[in-house]
Image 1 (tube, rainbow, N blue to C red):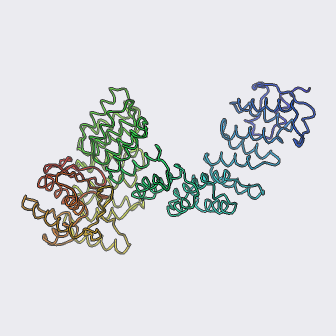
Image 2 (image 1 turned 90 degrees about the vertical axis):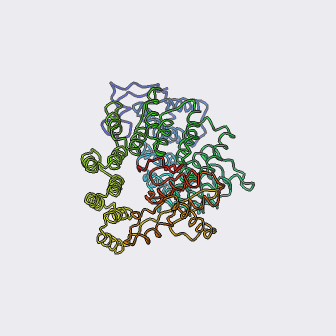
Image 3 (image 1 turned 180 degrees about the horizontal axis):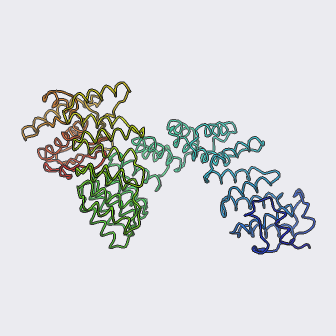
Length: 632
């Protein structure tokens, strides 16, 4: 029985590696000597394996599974080359899997080893495609898949699944479509797991209709497939469709039970839509199915209730959590901040410190946001300073954005501009828009024009930016500039996003735009709004004509402001709910001063709590007052 050759021979027998990968006889011990019979040296593994050979194969496989260092893999590799064991598909596959997927994950070395296998099988290709699909070179996985087909090897569902995942990582629509065609050609469309991956691919490429089409063609749909469908709806701004899926998947014809992932996705949808009633349904479902102890679900519930303006329930969930982590505290702090409870958010931060939970960057985003919304300039500056000095957290673009918002809202516009120009990270378009919004609030025309120039320079200007500039000019009474900007927008075909407000009643989302006539109860809604306006005028409400951007007379401006989307939504809420019911409205843009005043007066005259969530925060109107104290 021959012994393993001298270490120098091992090095010379291994494939040609770079100098830093070659074995050094003085530094690398042989892990376990493996006897090599002479008859094995030229074996082609076409004959049945004897019992002795089987034992040695098991011994070698065991050794491969226990290796953790690349130097040891190199020695085994040399042994495989010397003994012709590379021709044993079981051994070569196990070795390739270990180095490509589990231990070293060295894809360059794995590719070199793969190239030495004389006739790689589909399983070898699948291993490499899978390794590339989770690497920083996913496109190589697609190329391996293409090469596999060219070699005439049978492509199985696993091969296609890994190839699709590679396409997902690089968002290559053409590559994924080619794999889809291969799936149909090879008759693999009955593989539900493969089609689920294909759905995810189309969803990531923002091809929602194609993803839904694949879903419809599936013969069997499990919970994962339904979850991917919900995720697709969320990713492609079809949030209302996502809520509808929850009931459909549980119907008698489908009989699929939602799991904890389903609940997580639907809670995100509820938070986005301000759908409190539906969120409460999901909460009940979570408790019924025993998912209530999952930290991610509890944190999502806190976020959902906060983003629906229901802080009492958010705090109730938070208080009931046994193990509050940094995500839990950050969600509660952010919830307090966006609902106008800045002081309470800061108190929660200090309580978090007492409990020994170290803050992260998200925590400070919430705290700085709380300071911004409540005008706590000194406190905000203190937190911004201490986050790096005391907690070692380097401010990111979001923290700087909060500081610009804080200074801008407080009227410290020049200081906010200097901060942007001096910060260590490159300002993004969101930050410039934050400053532009502050210029609109304080009527700073010159700085507003400078900000627009920065946005143009970065090629990041949008229709909303010109709308803010229009507002700045109209507030200053500079109607020549207003006409100039409108002419420019018309020439460039720039169209602003229309204001849109939604209200959810009995699980149905009702959507309104300015002067909307699409609602089936439009006549009743407009009659109710006219009645409300009459009652509010008696109480002292006067339209804030500065919110109208057109050069009209005072009366005409008042009429133009009468049918803004949030007023229609609030009027519908008064019409469709019993007296005393809280009215919850979500708007896609910042609420205007006139609609803010309208909601304040209505809350006092009609004895209603009105909660409006605009693009940046919540306004809780009660007894003629707003939680923001008119600072937003």
